[in-house]
Structure formats: structure tokens, C-alpha cells
Length: 478
Image (cartoon, rainbow, N blue to C red):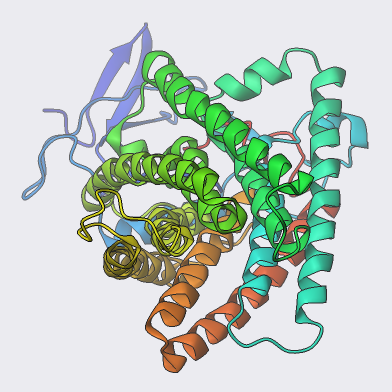
């Protein structure tokens, strides 16, 4: 073993080896990598002007095996301290180090809109899916006041406008920069945000049912046929997405358990929301159509939540092995709140849309009342799982809040919208006024969070914190 003062020759150059007492890690300002193999640093010898970098495995330390991951509070503090000292716009080992010393610093010059459009990613649809969820939440409020529905209608219209603008800008990116469409879909990070397009469409379909189709519409109403056709088209497309994107990921990428992020759930999220759509639209459809829609919605919801639970196993394993993600990625933990919450919401909504005279075997064993009871019980179990994930994510963000905006912040809005809607549905199912008021308080907090994230989103776009080289989801930073 070499001592601190011993020398060696590497490629004909004399160098000195130093064994650090504490192995440290390097992290970028948006990296979630919280571990590194121990290594030896090669220090420059005072007698020579050029040396070669050498990394060797460090001897095992007491109580820690070779290559074991550092996962204590001190390592998190060390990592975050090094984040603040990261050098501007440096790319190293596939991780991007960004400067945060002002929007127009010499290391980050102001760019025109055209080069910035190249970094307009699929993650922008998190804005429209959150806005659409807000319009649904306003409509479902248990305590209404005059003008609230009109506010919800305005949010619904604004969301359609935002969706059109985001879609137009995405198309402009693909036309102005050929090859970016394929690159965006196959990218190991941005590709996972492609499903947010379909999540936005899901909120538009459900909001259209709430705000554009009047109650008591006749079965011959053209809008009912349009909404039904939209539902079946959505089911087909999201089925292709769920199978196709995961098949591509399984064959084209290799991810380690330590790199597990909640965004891995996103490809199954859209088909899961088929159940939520069915819960909203089935009640206005004729009985024969309603049963078909509910059946499809239930199977899609079951597929979505089953795959999400499998992903939860990986997520918990990642958290147990490597600890919480880096502070800049911790808002993404709220994505885990969504699957059980939206499933609880779908269970209650679909059970209430079952025709009152439904009795599958005409023996009273599985009629509408039994289905509704089972749905409420199952929804209560799933709500508790959402609450657990919400608590874990909330404490993680409070412990180490993110400092720099990225579009993953919208995870603090949309999944929690489903959580709040599920709470409202449970309060209505149990006719419990205390739960309803609790849901109202949750809605107010969610509105405040929406405005908070929206403000930072607009500011980040203006000061070039996003839509800028190396600052968006089109770079692999974890």
C-alpha cells in the first residue's frame, strides 16, 4: 500500500498519490446522483507542471464495504455544498453543471428566441395538465359560491388556449430543428415526459364534459357522441403508448436502481386516467353505452395502478438504498401520490355511474348498490396510500427545498389535484361535512401552490432558467 508521501510513475510522468480521509462526490446543480465509488485523487507534484489523473479503489473502511453507497445526512450536506461551488456550464461524465450567478452573466449570455426553442421540451405539458386539473377541482368543490363555476369555465378556456400555444411551440421546435422529434422521444429523460401530452388531453376531455355538455342532455345530443368517440380514441392511443414506450425503454435503455425516478411512472399514467374519464362521462351516456365505457375504464384503471404499484417497489428500493433524491428532484416524489388517488376517484365515480337497474346475474349478488359499497371501501384504502406518499414527499421537500426552477415542480400540483378530488369524493360518499371542509382547505392550499409554481415558471422562462442549453429535460442530469 502506498503512503501519503510515496511517488509513482504514470506514463513516464512522476506523480504523487494521496489517499483522502473522506471520499467525496461531485454533483451538478440539478443532479440526483448521491453516490460515488471511493477513489484516490492524483495531486500535482510541485516539481512538475503536468500530471496524469489516476483513480484507484480506496481500501475498505471499517463498517463499510467496497463500493458501498454513502447515504447519510453528512453526504447529503457535502453534496449540496459542492452544488453551490459547481462551475458554470461544465459538462463532465454525462452530468451537466449549471451556473446560477444571474440570468445574463458572461457564462450565460442572453439568447434569442430561436435557439431557445430547441429546448422547449415535452415537460411543458405539465403546465396544461395542471391547469386542466385545476378547472376540474373548481367544478367539484363541495362548497360552492356564486360565480365559482364561471371561474372554473374561464380556467377551462385558458387551459385550451395554453394547450394550443404549447402544441404550436412544440411543432415549431420540430420544424425548425429537424431530428429533434425523434431525439425527444428516445431521450432517456425527456422521453418520459411525452405522456404529459396525453394527460393534458385527458383533463380537456373531462373538463369538456363538465363545462360544455349541459346536464340532462338527451342520448341523441351530438356532443355526447363526440365525447364518447374522444374517450375510445384516447383508450386506443394510451394503450399503444403504455405498451410501446415501455417496450422501447426496456430494449433501448439500461437504468440502474439507484437512478430510479418517479417519472418512470408517467408512461402508464395516461391509460390509467381512462378510468377517471369514464367516471366523469359515463353518467351522461345511455345505459348500454355507459356500461361499455365503465368496463373499459375499469380495466384501464386496473392496468395503470398495477404497473404503478410495481414501480413503487423499485422506488422504495431506491429510497432505501440510496436515500432521497437530490433537492432539485424531490418535488417529483409527489408523482407517486397520483396513481392511488386517481384510482380512488375513478372507483367512486364509475360506481356512481353504473345504471341503477344493473344486475349482472339478476340474483342481487352484484347489483349497483353492492358495486358502490365495494368502490367506496377500496377508495378508502387507496386514499391512505396516497396520503402516505404525500407525507413522504412533503417532508422531503421541506427538509431540502429546491432552489432552481424546473418543470418538474408541476408534480406538486397535478397529482395532488387527484388527491384532493379523491378526498372530495370520499366526503360526498360518506356524507361527512368534516371531510368536505378538509377537502376545501386542501383545495385552497393547492390553488396557492398552483399560483406559486406558475409564477416561478413564468419568471424562469423570462430570465432563461429554462428553455436554455443545459437547463431543460433534454439533458441527462440523473
